[in-house]
Image (tube, rainbow, N blue to C red):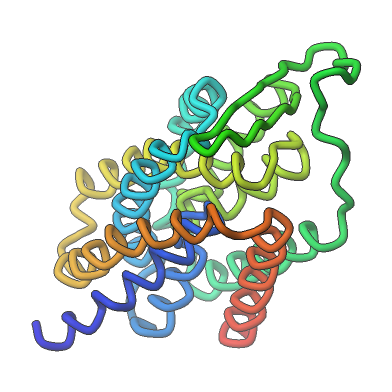
Amino acid sequence: MAWEIWLIPMGFAVGAVGTLVGAGGGFVLVPILIMLYPERSPELITSMSLAVVFFNAFSGTCAYARMKKIDYRSGVLFAVATVPGAILGALTTGLLPRRLFDGIFGGLLLALAVFLLVRRRRPTGEGDAPRPNGHTVRTLVDAEGGRYTFSFNPITGIVLSLVVGYMSSALGVGGGVIHVPALIRLLHFPAHIAAATSHFILTFTAMGATVVHIAAGVFSQGALATLCLAMGALVGAQLGAWISGRVHSSWIVRGLALALGSMGIRILLLAF
């Protein structure tokens, strides 16, 4: 028990960073768990991470809801699409050998970092701009009066969400680390709205995958460590959301890319 207590501040840091960039913290937590528990299976690593991501996402969603930065209509639509993929991912995680799991995870993080840094952002659809065929326009006003207008193709979002749900659940990252870059670069969400909406979606994705892992009895080990990490993440998420409201959107994108790249390189070095 004494050793696990030290995981509470670690969970706090994971929750703060994950909520700041809207990724739920799984992309930070999985590499940490890989290094802390080299003997444990990918299935247990992902189940621990997803449980913590759920508490982190729930806490962050409450904070972002107070700031009125969540696009609920898009969030519900995409969340419904992610849940089937998340359940399937949770069921197939145990089929991956540990080394292959580490290699896929590290490569994915590095690819997402490059994607964020290299791909140029296109306009996000001002209110007086022509709307492409099939696109939906959203206008949000946050608690401080900030106005966000953007457009996206909902069909593209649903397909992406289904794939994100599977990949994120299979790798234990909850989905935000993949969904946020997709929302920003492919669906043209403003960075702050993408981070907040991603957290809302994460709550459902991580919950669905965690329920599957619990039903399968995966938590026969690691329950205490998961609880300590979750306790820290609940509080850290509030800090991350508070900082997010005071950081320029470009720094959120750059910070996410830097975190993804550094973690990806670290995991690949350990795997090979």
